[in-house]
Image 1 (cartoon, one colour):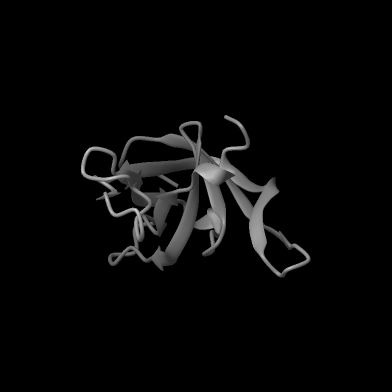
Image 2 (cartoon, rainbow, N blue to C red; image 1 turned 120 degrees about the vertical axis):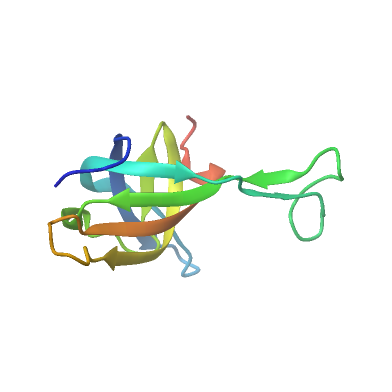
Length: 122
C-alpha cells in the first residue's frame, strides 16, 4: 500500500462494551495499527452555551474535525476511535474508496471529530 500524502502512525480501537445503562464508551484494546493520513479542517466553533457548549463570543467551544485516510487492511467502522498525533478521534462516515483505475490505491476515508473524553488523561 502506498500513501500519496504525509504519513501518520495510527492506532484504531473498537468501541467498548455497553455499561449498565446501555451506553457504549470508547474501547481500550487496539484493533489495528499502521500508517494513515490525518487531514484536519478548521473545525466547528460555537459560542452558544445552550447548544455548542461555549461561553460567549470570546469563549467559544471548538471541536477539531477533519478526515482520516487509511489503507484497505485497516477495516475501520463508525464508532471506532483512532489515536493519531497523541490525540483520540471518533470515526464516522467510514467508507472504502476504490481506485477508479485499479492501480492499488484503494483507501478508507473516515470523518473524524475530536473527543476530549477519550484522551484518558493525556
